[in-house]
Amino acid sequence: MKIRPLASSDIPQLFDLWQRRWGQLFPLDQALWNQQTSGDPQHYRPDLSCVLHEAGPVGFIGVKTPPPIPAWPKQDPQNAWISYLLLEPGREELGKKLLEHSLNQLEQLGYHKVAYGSDPWHFFPGLPLEDSPLERVLLEAGFEAGGVAQDFHRILGNYQVPAKAIADLEKSGFQIAPCGLEDIPRLLSFLAETFPGRWYYETVRRLQSELEPSNLLLLKSQQEVLGFCHLYPKHSRRIGPGLYWLRAFSPNPGGLGPIGVSEKVRGTGLGMALLGYGVERLKNLGAEEIVIDWTTLADFYGKLSFGAWRSYKAYWKLLGLRKAQSEKPWAESSPQTI
Ligand SMILES: CC(C)(COP(=O)(O)OP(=O)(O)OC[C@H]1O[C@@H](n2cnc3c(N)ncnc32)[C@H](O)[C@@H]1OP(=O)(O)O)[C@@H](O)C(=O)NCCC(=O)NCCS
Image 1 (cartoon, helix red, strand yellow):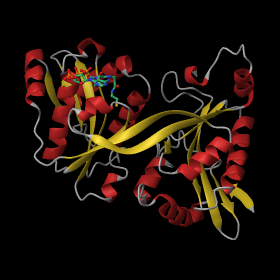
Image 2: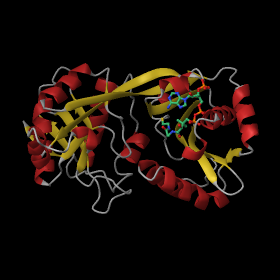
Image 3: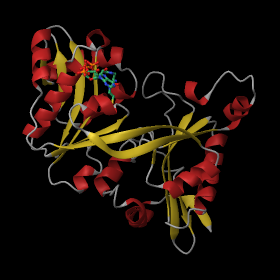
């Protein structure tokens, strides 16, 4: 049995194994693989990602780490990620070896925490709840469990923007419209102020990779941007998280999210209006069903008849110094505050 860095010649076998283990729920294709791995060279670590060989490959592990210069303000420079741990079904005992190998490497490189999934350009927000054998592997390796997040799904049918959303938008005097080139500076200053973390980073990267910004829907006044919503119609140049798996089943899929509005206007129906118009715009662009990814807001999306689809549980493990500190009763840091 041998563990070695992943080579490009291993990728066809990785795809075969992915298909065997997760193909029904999470069918991977080359475009998504490229985007989530080499497509983010700031985070993806091909040198740390490994394959476990017996007679042939029986396990793969994907690793990401934060870049030396943070990709977004307050990015934790010591938080690494296991993007996926892919094991031959029925051979889960092999996961221990792969995890030990990668966690040792990360510890030696000085990382203090590792999360399963939730990596930048992730495949999974956490551990898919359907993969209970893998959950046991993480628990046995000392990973701690956090909360559950979900993707939500709806078939659009004869969807129409709710009357209340139309009325709330009219009352506000604001406008909901696709982002134009001229809106970009105000969009970025809104994001820098309101959502300065990963959503800022991902929006900047999307603007760099797409030809024009109209798949970002904005809530705006004459002077400023007050809300944003990412829309991913079927042929988006960037494969948004809502499209990752849906496009494998649906001839006309759409993805939506993230979505957020300024604190100044929250609670006045405008978040729902932005969502309502976002769904309508995706429908007008040809979507027949939509996935909203990685959220805990079941009640909010439930108001537009979105129902739970895939579920993921957060898992993380503390390494080295951080682990030693957390084991002391007087330690100040806890996993939740890192
Ligand atoms: C989530 C968000 C977009 C909602 O927008 P909002 O303007 O505050 O909410 P609205 O006033 O439009 O609320 C519409 C309805 O949804 C409900 N709602 C709003 N936020 C909710 C939440 N977080 N959880 C559950 N229900 C919620 C409201 O109670 C309201 O219900 P009602 O019509 O029965 O009175 C906004 O709070 C936000 O930007 N939050 C931070 C970013 C975020 O969490 N985005 C979603 C990540 S998946």
